[in-house]
Length: 138
Image (cartoon, rainbow, N blue to C red):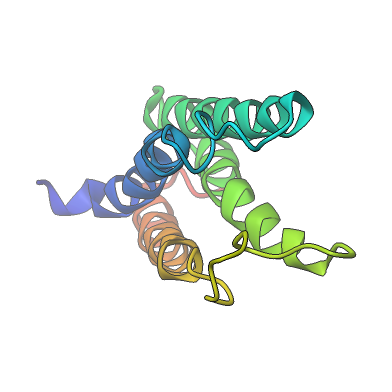
């Protein structure tokens, strides 16, 4: 991999996890195929999975379209981060928990959410520096 694209590649990694991760985590008997879930809960789960796919795909498009610009980088990094930021913020809603009973873990999603945000931050910093050196950093 070219060193000049390392920042975008790191953000792209988060974008791919954002697009595919919800399907890997939720397309099973605990979520999509859970007979105990009412249809409206499944609707919101589907909405969340589709949102992850849309955010990830749009982030990749912003990051890799030509020419590479600061605006594309900013948009790509924000889009790659939104899914994870909103997942963390969901814990603040009344009665919200990260797992259903009988699960006892507090926030198992943290093992993906926080590293995804850290990788995006690192990628953003590296790509900002690269863009500044090439004169595209505004």
